[in-house]
Image (tube, rainbow, N blue to C red):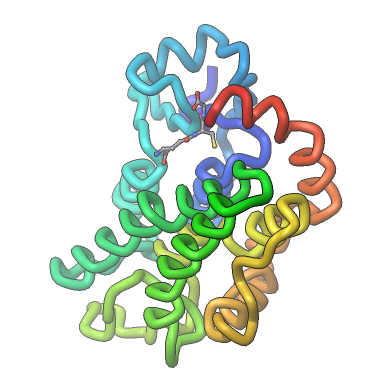
Length: 238
Ligand SMILES: N[C@@H](CCC(=O)N[C@@H](CS)C(=O)NCC(=O)O)C(=O)O
């Protein structure tokens, strides 16, 4: 068995961020173990008996669970450049704050709009999701990338973090493609470029970064996958 294993599922936005992080860090030697999330297998149940969810990173025999914790683990275990999180406590706390906000509010908000069929509840869900995205729109103002998510100019490397992708870009990395696909299949608009010019601009730039481009599935593949998987996912996960 490989020293490093990533237990994941195809097109999971949480697994995608880890694939990106490993690639950014130049870690190519790991075993990827694809999981069936409807009929969970022994590997997933063994390494993540608490939540039974992907992703799980297994280093040696140590499982690391929860994608945000895994991102930090990767950053600390392979500290060579590029670092993902800021070094200093204040910007580091900000990065964690926004990542938590993104995962606990923005992602569930967006998925909530997607799961709901047409009607008043869907319209309300769209309104709520958009209110949450507005915070990200403010955060990206004046920056090319989210970078580490904190004002990292006092970092010892002092290399203008917002000019390159970092922790928070990876955390939000599902937005550009996944939201487009949700919009298409869910017949709705969440990220109107007039309402969210900064976020849309960021999304276009993010998917053009070579490392990201190499890992992104094609839009057609994702649409095809979600079209088939959505009824089953809706029954299981909502
Ligand atoms: N907070 C977790 C979320 C992981 C998660 O929701 N994974 C989904 C796949 S995208 C999953 O394994 N779902 C299976 C289930 O809910 O039973 C993380 O960041 O790792």
